[in-house]
Length: 140
Image (spheres, rainbow, N blue to C red):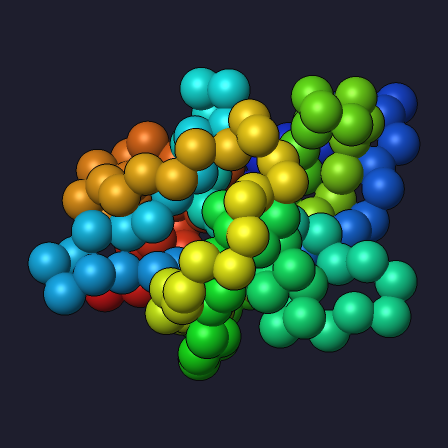
């Protein structure tokens, strides 16, 4: 499995599995989320008892208000990272899926998440996490 990030000596890393969507248009634009200036893919960590697909569908509604159809798995990557919103270090196992944007179901719960469409090549450079940049480059 490809790995990103650096393990900082003396830090405790919580292992967390997460699922992320790569939603592309016919013109190769990728759906990304602007979270307070950080560009990320929609998705996030699994809650206890959730499958990757269930977590991805839940996260999508929370972040965007939209349903998605989860498609084929693109790949997995491991990332050692510090998450400012949790003020913790994580050893993230990130699973990436192709997905199709569905209809709007509700208002997003996470009001600091703004949906943006970005050319995939640009997103491959601007995504904040190394694992997500890698996944975007694999989605062609």
